[in-house]
Amino acid sequence: MKVQSTKDLLCFTEIRDSWDDECFLDKLHVLAQGALSSWAMPLKMAALFPERHRGAVMRDVTCRYVQYLVNMIKIPEEINLENYTLMLPSVAIGNVGQLCIDLLISSLNLRKIGSLWNSMFLPICGLDPYDKKSNSICTTADFYLGTCHNIILLQLRSPYVGNSNEFFDELAQFIQRKRINKIIILTSSYDYECADRSEFKIKYLTSDESLSNDEKLLKNLCWIPHIKSLKTDSTEQCYIPGGGFANGLYGYLKTFGIPCTVLFKYCSEGDNVSDALVLFKGLNEWLNLINNDTNSIKYPSSWEYFFGNPPSLDMY
Image 1 (tube, helix red, strand yellow):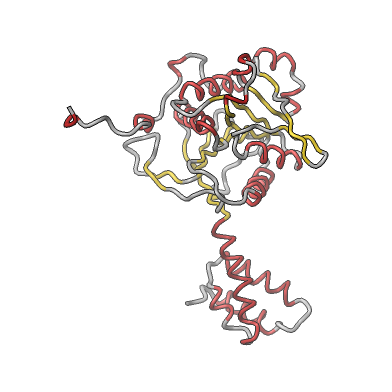
Image 2 (cartoon, rainbow, N blue to C red):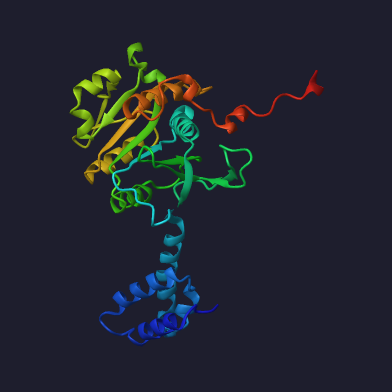
């Protein structure tokens, strides 16, 4: 393994020579960060330290190396997202939020600008779901940009299996660093949780004062505020059964003062295109993204294969 530059080697040697100083740990952290940014290997660094410290050095730097690999948001730095709205789905019952994001990407012809990798989600890779002729690929979590409407969409394509805290923290830091204005989470909930048929309209939770204080807009949208609550440890929290991580992310962003709105619809498993269309149209009435007619809605080409390939004619 090679150190990639003379500067790196000098840095390693300086840290090694100060291993018994009071500031050793601080310098070790600097070393780890510098090495990771230049892709030097933990083994090379550990070899420069006294033998009795190599195990600790390896563990510390390797942990940082893995952290760097598994928690990444890759978007070109030159893209200015200040005052943009970030929309993302929560993987939930019927995948309604994901279907709605698909409709937005396809109907607005948004372009992919980056991706997210986090150990919370199962890794996947596939063909471009919006253009059959494209040579690009899709991954577990991809970002799509709409400069005309100041929106950025994060599409999630696999279930989450890990701890959500790192994902929430990484996303919150990204939002603050890029000065994104507000967040919209799209999700769904079990229809058997709905006691009143009138509540099959869009329901919402919001910490966005520009929305919650606009009574006229909310009246025109005909959304229903979500008030179902769950008491835990003497605190009362709204929750969405079957809504995935929507509740958790909403609460997490709220603690940082980041305006966030959750939109969801009751549904059951099956063909949930109609549910996604309801969510899409409700969102469009709020943000005025496309003309309010069915001809403006474009289905992704990948939707042709929702239920697999057509049956073989040899069966008949």
